[in-house]
Length: 578
Image (cartoon, rainbow, N blue to C red):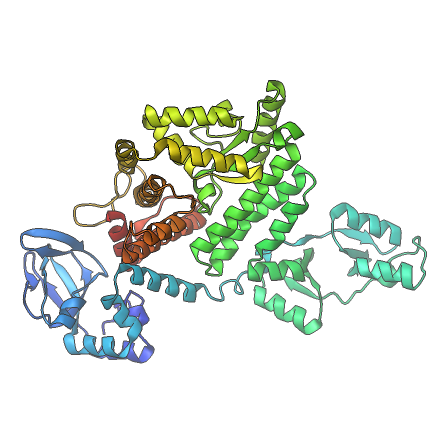
């Protein structure tokens, strides 16, 4: 095989080393002139082709149905079926790797994972990509650096300081261990050391800490691998180790933080939120939520699980903020979140989509004070303002239930673009604090207001066409003008799925909130076939995964096709076009 052959390109990345060697011995290179037929419609396919350079048209009759480029392969189906249903013709000067039919069929017969890429429908191919991603990311957490973990701060005292001073210092910096300076050497003292000295050994709190200090410090470097720290803690039976950077200590790595990092333990963040007694406590938790996303993806956790975990944490955070700030007259109402947060499909924190349903009118000045304080708190936590101002601070989204119900009837009878948008937003709402019965009643009234109104739903569904699908004439991904090599998958791929499913769900009066749950319910009702429902869910998660990984890699919600594998591009184009 030529040295330039990319054995990591799907589906060849599924081959064993021995199978790769078989390919090396069998593969050749072919040159095709512009307009030259590579495989004719109805002809026997004698090889599997992989484009090295140039472009190949896939044609049905006179119509070009796809344009294949570098690393794309064809026509595996013809190999299996004996003849090609399509014509493959070079559009320009083209070079291809050529794997003879017998060699390709032997690989298909010997390697189920290789065969799966040619036999299975698109939903199974998406699942195969997800499994490969899990394999690739397995162990990535253990190869992370210690500096990526949340460390306890490095605080110092002198060897001559008293036990009482040490105790106060630990409380000030919220830590259970201190570094102790004694001339040129550095030691460590812990809260347990202080407790044993005073309680068991009856030492006075005015005694110096030097006799209690351990100067045989167990430490790791900040750029050491996480697995090295874990091994060291296990061997030395230590609950914490010091972390050094160059010649100084920068903090402590506790076993709790290490376990949380390795396992992606979001429960620790949830507990911090639930125990919070002030906004400052919640601010710490808000920062930790963002870190959980990166940790979970590094571990290969599927995007649907990441979204569920992050959405739950964000709901807890927003709900606890409401509990801390709302006076009793407002707290008996219902705080709701909407949009992707409401559907449980939020990954990276975006803007505020929230509202307040009051059970009765409250004092205007009191309500306005709460609106300002609540929005400011979420600002501090990193939640950007909603461009459409769908926020508690907007009087239209923080008012009594009866006012909402009156608007529902108006939105249904005199629908316009804003009315449709408001219905879609509210239908995705979930309660995060207060009286959830208020939201339940509101949703039921919203469904009743639009029930059996086919004309309404015809217009409601047209929002799917708001954003152009980023697919070109030859099933290639179209990038955004002025934004370089970038595609907005949220607008062009995710939104049509979400809103299409939402339309079918509200038309049938479903109370499920997440898109996946709505799809499953529609399948159960016979509104969607089981196969299509499965493919639709897989497509949603696939597009969400690409978008999340782009956000984590470049702090951008736009996906760059150049960074995708050829199979990812094919699946992305196929799902967006569908």
